[in-house]
Image 1 (cartoon, helix red, strand yellow):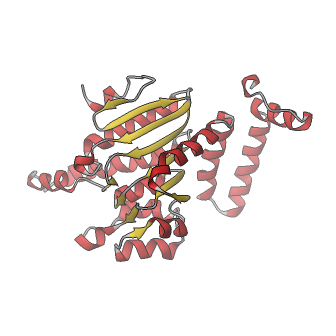
Image 2 (cartoon, one colour; image 1 turned 90 degrees about the vertical axis):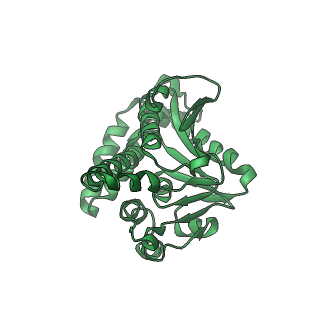
Image 3 (cartoon, one colour; image 1 turned 135 degrees about the horizontal axis):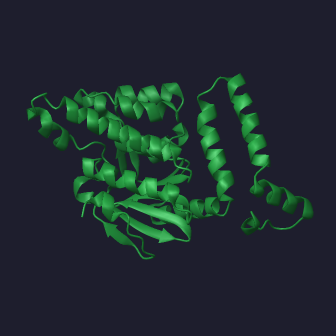
Length: 278
C-alpha cells in the first residue's frame, strides 16, 4: 500500500507508516519523519506522506495541534539529491520531474501554513536546505541544543530559492540573506536569536517541551485558533491600511462566533469558559 494511503489508518498507539510515523494523543497529533537512513530527506515519497498527513490533520476535528518531529541525528536534509540527479537522463534532462518535485514541495509548505491546526516543529538535529524551510514554515519551533540549521545550496551551485521564501518571511532580511549567501551552519542558539525557532532546550526535554506547547495550544478554542492563524498569515502580506481593514472584519466575525460569546461571558462572570458550550 502506498505511504500516502497508509496514513488513513488511525490508532491510539504509535503507528509506522513507512516514511512518517503517526501517534495520536488527546488533541495532539505527532508526525515523525522516520527515514533516518536517508537523513529524512524530502524525497517524492516523503513529500507525499507529509502532505497526506497534514491534509488529514487539518480535517480531523479531534486534532487541535500537530507536532512535527524526526528520527535520527538529522531532522531533514532537504531534497533527495540522488533522486533528482537520477532524472538527468530523462529526455528533457529532468526538467519536468524537477518542476514536479519543487511544486510538490511548495504545496506542502503552503499546506503547513494553511492548515487550521497550529504545527510545532521539534528539531532534534540538522535541518538543511528544504529541511530548514520546513522548520521556517511551522508556526512554532523548538530546537534541541545540538540542532543546527543551514541553507547550503549556494555551496553546490543550487541557490536555496524556495527555502528563501519561508526564511524571508520569518527572519529579518539581512539575517535571511546571510544564511542564503554564506550557506554556513547555524547553531540552535543563533537560530533562536535570528527568530527561526522559538526556544532551545536540552535534547532530553525536546519532545516534552514541544508537546507542552502543543497541549497548551490544544486547550484553546479550536475555531478561534483557526481564525487567528489564517488571519495572521493573510494580513502579513498586506499593506498596513489593508491589513487593518481585513483585521476589522476578522474581529467582527470572531465576535459573532460562539467561542467569543462563551469566553467573554466567562471572563465577565469570573468563571472558567466551557468550550463545550460553543
